[in-house]
Length: 303
Image 1 (spheres, rainbow, N blue to C red):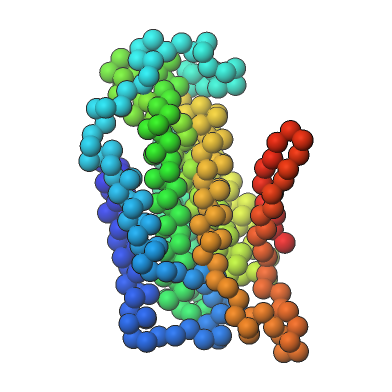
Image 2 (image 1 turned 180 degrees about the vertical axis):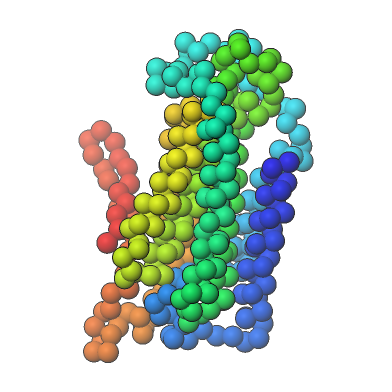
C-alpha cells in the first residue's frame, strides 16, 4: 500500500516537472548564458532518458504490490537464532520503542518531502534567472534520485532476504515473524531514502548558492535528520545497525551520483571571466581511484 501511494505521488511530481521542461522546449525556448548564473539550476536534464529511468524505477518499486509478497519469507522461519548474529547487531534484538518507530516514519516523510518544499521556496524567495524551468530540472533530479534509491534498496532487500530483529524474538507473534515484510531488513529503506534526499538536496543547494554561508548548515541539518531516522529504526527494532549503515552508504552514494551526472557543462561565459581567465564556479566534486597493497577504493572530495 505504501509503495502504491509513493507510485502515485512520485508520478505526479515527475509529470509536473516534465511538463514544464517539455513546454519550454516545444515553444523553442533556448537557455542563454544569463540563465546560467548564480542561483540557477546546476543541472541539464534529458527528458527522454530521465523519464525512462524514473518510470523504470517506479515499476520496480511497485512490483511487490503487483506480484504479491507471498513468495517472500524469512529464510530461517521461526528457527532464527540470535546467536548467529554478529555481536554488534545482536544488541538490537529486543528493542521495541514505539516512539522511535513513529519518529522514523515521520522523519522519513519529512526527509523525502523537505527537498521539494525547500526547492520551491528557494525559487519564490531568491528569484533565480531560470525561474520555474530551473525548479523543474531540480525536481526531476531529486525525484529520480529518490526513485532509483528506493528501487535499488528494494532489489537488494528481495535478494538478501535478511530477517528483521524482531524475528529473533519469541515474544513476537508467529504471524508477524513470518510476514513477508519481516524478511526485508537489509538494507534499511528509511535510511537509504533519507540519506539520498539529504545528500541530493544539499548538493543541489551547494551548487545553486556556492557563496552562501548556509551551505555547511544545510549539509549538517539534512544529514543529521537522516542519521536520526536511521538510529530510530534500530531503537524500534525494525533494523540492525548494519542495515542502517548499508542504507546510509547506498543513499548517500545515490544522492551524490545522480545529481553529479546531471551537472551541466559550463559554457564559455561561465568558464571565462572578462579577461578570458577561468572563473571559479563554486565547489566541485572529485572522484579519484585509490589503490593500496591491501586493496582499492574511491576517494570522494569537494573543493
